[in-house]
Length: 257
Image (cartoon, rainbow, N blue to C red):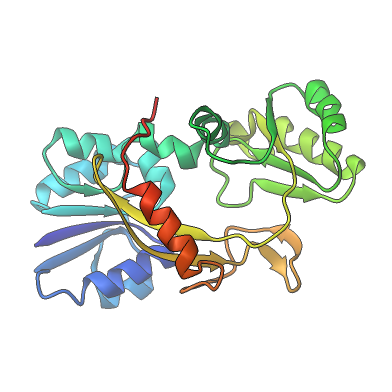
């Protein structure tokens, strides 16, 4: 198989390491890749992960049997849609499905629409309205830029003054268009984890859970980051919890719109 791997971060490095071990692989190309990935894949550093047209052209040129997409930014640009149109199998959702990751407001509305438990929230584009909405919540306040912000678009403010400052920064252009609106969310304390499933549009199969470290400092302190490391298996996912999730996720009753 000829495989194109899109991305250049640690996630893609791990994917390259594992994909290269398969006896089915005849050629593995990473675009743009990073120097550490050169041990496992042929690099195409001149192609950005956000250039969906160039990536689709590369996939056609190398006669890719499969394209594995790592970064959310590539999915937001509709790379999977372009590949699907070209008849090239892609491991990654369409731009519409990727909105669950690329837009926090879309994700919250989706959860609410389908009765999936989620923290109380509101979506705001105006600074004054967002500040006034803080009165509906208690400290600490959770302020999120709606769009992709490299994992740094979430602030947990200990008091109202800090929350108001975060609102001003986000709606003032700190994250560009990703912060053109903000989601203010009810703070929830406790364990957080990610349970993963492989989906093809009709079926879903669970394949494990993980926990990552979002705060910059020890003891769950400091600003949120794109992730300071992760481990799996995660103790939060007990066999009973996984069984409950498995019974629910195999029923393909949820639609994107």
